[in-house]
Image (cartoon, rainbow, N blue to C red):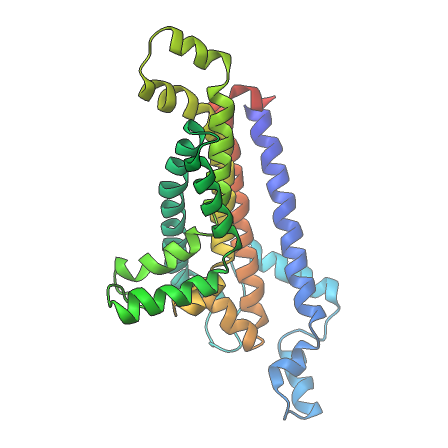
Length: 304
């Protein structure tokens, strides 16, 4: 188990370093940052002052190493637009994004696992085809379009739910549901295929021969094995939700990290953009690592 954990930690560190390098490089490829910060009406003298003040006149490798050293201790510099520490901005906005992501994942699991089990039990029937059609529609539906439709129907016409803000749990119902639709198709299909495979295995036939109840066979034996890939995909989907929350947070005016990233991109606030990309990538890597460890606990064969 120790060697398995060490391998995963090394891989996670390599992925984090790669993302850190890409985040730094892509912001520099977008153009001259000093000109972007100074604005279109700035003079050459103003641009030169800004370039010196922010260290943009130094060689790129030197800038990169300096940023890595600061980022390693959680120092992402100061925002150009908000005039505040980037780490403070992210810490202030992160609870909203985490709440949104966990809400979306919770809704996705509550919907997809029962649907996947139902489709597997009724394989080939109209129920199975209906579940697969629902998954296909969910996969093809644009999240921003679904968000706008829900806002109009449930928010404006029926008045059941608020369309923006973060004042209560009700504010997360619609954006969480929209976010869940991006994960429901994959989780449903994965649960269905895993359950079909498990129900056709020898140990399930043995359990039936012993006279075990249908509930025990489905949820105690078959679902335990079918859940292994679902756990991995669920953690990946949560990472996707956190990273892709920029669209949902913008549509529903949720001032989380995704909305912060959108604001920073429009304002050319590259220290915030770099930090948001890095933080979300690290969260994604940690979630994937935890999923691998959980699967290794459930199935010792994965540790080899």
